[in-house]
Structures are given as structure tokens and as C-alpha cells.
Length: 242
Ligand code: PTJ
Image (cartoon, rainbow, N blue to C red; front, side, top):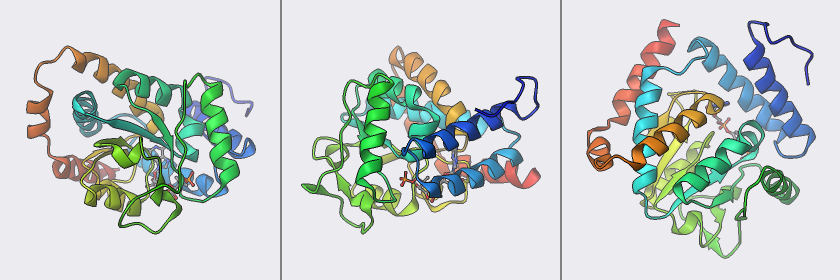
């Protein structure tokens, strides 16, 4: 780990960078993941590296969607696994969802490394991609899914998604919750609920809201009111204001 004192003004950002680098060294994160992370950092910098109100609104809707889902799934790629393994496992447990590995840059070794990483962090089980279930409308490696996971899911939580799969999932009639610091990305614009925030900050808040929503009798009313376009517009205005 970088030798940075906790008082350093960029401490949290540098520790997160360390986590991504460690992910690459462990074979969990792809080398391309570093580039994706850098892009995320730039947006986060412009957003003041804090959770804004539009993200809180989306987190609330995401919690409502997850607790009312019939078959939710938490999809994990190499960046998410490196940055927030414990919170992803806790979220899956809280909403009764399986964790499923689904990566863009094809690598059987990396799929196995992500699985071991999640098991080491306490995941009870991890679904792997299969050749038996394939998503329509998609050509990339992400089309290979598990028949009892993403293939059968009605709601999928997919942090740091790529636009193609998000579109394919929505076209297949599934509802997609994503976390993406870029409100202009195709994923952000295609998802049902877009949380424009750093996945490391958004996940603990989402977990809190999932617990709160369990005792709520009107999650559907909140979902009916929710407007993802409005949330994205607010995020873009905040970005442009710097
Ligand atoms: O492990 P793999 O092979 O599935 O690859 C994962 C990455 C993330 C490399 C792959 O999905 C990819 O290339 O993604 P993109 O198309 O670069 O999109 C990633 C999006 O996540 C970008 O819009 C980034 O701004 C955003 N992002 C990066 N880091 C974070 C983030 N959003 C939230 N939190 C972050 N920490």
C-alpha cells in the first residue's frame, strides 16, 4: 500500500487507487480496469468526491427496486471486486441475491481469481458464466451468463457496467441498477436506475437504505415517482458547474 498519512487531503482517493492496483496484481482486475478507474476518478474529482443529492435519490430507488425484486442478482466485474468485495457480498445477502461474475475482457483465469477473492471475503457461493445461457442482443464475453442467475433475473445490480450489456439486459425486459460516475455514458442513460457516485461510497449507503426499506410499506410508490432522466440531468448540471 502507498505510504500516505491519513491526514493527506487525497487519502481516500489514493487508498482506492491502491485497491485497484492490488486487484490487478492479484489477477482480479484487468489492466484496462486501471484506465476505467482513471476516468472515474476524473468525474469524481469534478463532483467534489462526495455523494450528491441526485445519487441519494437514485440509491433510495435502487433499494426499493432490490427489496421488491423477485429474482435480484448482483453482477461483479474486476473493478467492483477489487474496490468493494465486502459490500457487494453484504448487499447480495441483504436482498437474497446470488453474486454472479460477469466480465467484459474475457479471461477464465480472471473469472476464477474473482471467485476466489469473493469466497475469501466471505461469499457463501458465486455463480460463474456458462455457455448454457446466453443473453440476446449482445456479442461480447458478457453474453455468457448463469441460467439461475442473470439469465433468470428480473433486477440486476451492475456497478461499472459497459453500455452494450446494459442495453441488452434492458432489451431483454430486465431492470438494471448501475453505479457510474459518468452520467453521460451509455450505461448511465440506458439503466433503469443510475447512481452517479463512486461505488465505494454508494454501496454502504445502499446497504443502509435496503435495511430501512425492509420496514417500508410503499417501495412501489417511490419507484413510480422516480425519474432517472431527472437524476441524470441534475448530475450533469453538477458536473458542468464543477
Ligand atoms: O472486469 P471487466 O473485464 O468486466 O472490466 C471492467 C471495466 C470497468 C474495465 C469495463 O466494464 C469497462 O471498460 O468499463 P467502461 O466502459 O470503461 O465504463 C466504466 C464506467 O465506470 C466509466 O463510465 C467510469 O467513469 C465509471 N467508473 C470508474 N470507476 C468508478 C466508476 N463509477 C463508479 N465508481 C468508480 N469507482
